[in-house]
Amino acid sequence: MDAAAQYALAYALTTSAGLRAILPLALLSGAIRLGLTAPPPAFDWLGSPGAAIVLAVLAVVELLADKIPVLDHALHVVQVLTKPAAAAILVGGAVHAQSHTVLAALMIVGALNALGVHAVSSGVRLGSTATTAGVANPLLSVMEDGAVVVTSVTAFFAPILAAALALILVLIVVVTVRAVYRRVKA
Image 1 (cartoon, one colour):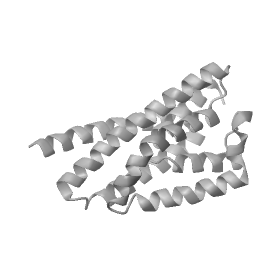
Image 2 (cartoon, rainbow, N blue to C red):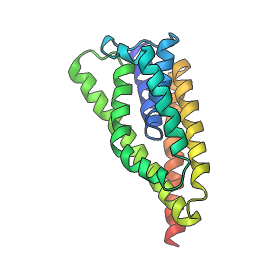
Image 3 (cartoon, rainbow, N blue to C red):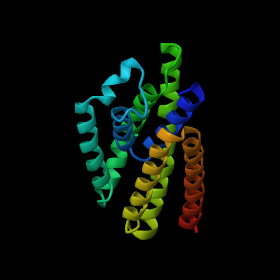
Image 4 (cartoon, rainbow, N blue to C red):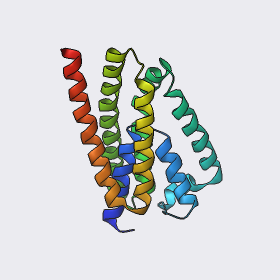
């Protein structure tokens, strides 16, 4: 995979991590195990059977917890830390950087990308809670799950397309936040 494809893969996965911290990690672990991508040596552990099992279990827990009112908001608070950390690991597992300094910088950028997506999606969730008393939150969660799966899986087969999908996803979320904000304000 060339450098542009690696960066596109990292961008798509870190954007997905802004919605779900563990699911993109679990998908990357599975992709490594299936031979769809090869991590740099320092991140070979992502493809180990133990990591794959732990990440799969945690991804299921994350997916289920996000559908439960009140628990979903608690999860979002905790994920202010876990989503950027997951994104940094995703960058490390996707990009073969020419130096540790470059890799560290890219991991920071990936973490900030996930944190930004998380902030915007949390705004959508707060708006949904304010306008629907949380009734729409499980539906939003399912939509986020779908976006993460489609973007992440696409990233392993067509990274540039996945990066474009991730950018479109971010734009949709920003437009939605603005609409919800206007609705709440009115």
